Image 1 (cartoon, one colour):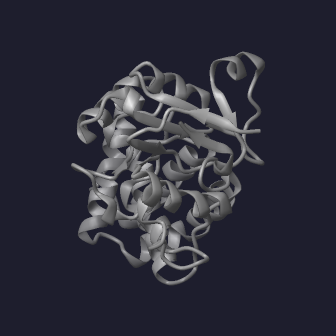
Image 2 (image 1 turned 45 degrees about the horizontal axis):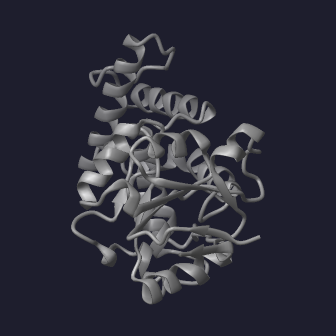
Length: 264
């Protein structure tokens, strides 16, 4: 079934469940963090980057606690190293068990994934239709691409640069080289993905109107938020994604492959 939509100047892409499989993120990437967290803390303990990660974890946990979230706190920096490490592990696993998307968690995850990608222990995955269609849309139609994910910008770039088929040079749409009037990658520092203000912030950053942008995601609440800014949205249906209810299907166009999309 073909899906027709006005040709945008830019496409804003979600990652998980849209251009890569949910299982890749939740099983491969998340499992890597769980399995390597303690070793990572041991190997990189108290370098400058680690210190910044710990400060952010501690500060966000305190803020969440004040908002009545029963999150494990990071013990005071005056405690011994083993106690601090144990509290970090407890905090991180607690957040991951609940699929939280705090900036502190995503930042630390990205740093752990960097070790995995750079050492060849992790390889990115993308759907075949993504690898086929993005270069066509860019080169034939002049469409610019942006990424908006709850994962940190650093982890997004790592994913794009280390794939089973090599670096995505052919899909320069998702390469850092495709900067257009500013940033190409956005994470939770621009705001939560279910908050319409986040999309307003992105539009301001890329200097485009909402109706010039197409947002492709698998999450209805994200599409709802983007729609409030006048952004056109399509829900991507992939194997493993959460099912869409009938009411959602009446509000948004859907597709199972980027190859089903026709720009008019």
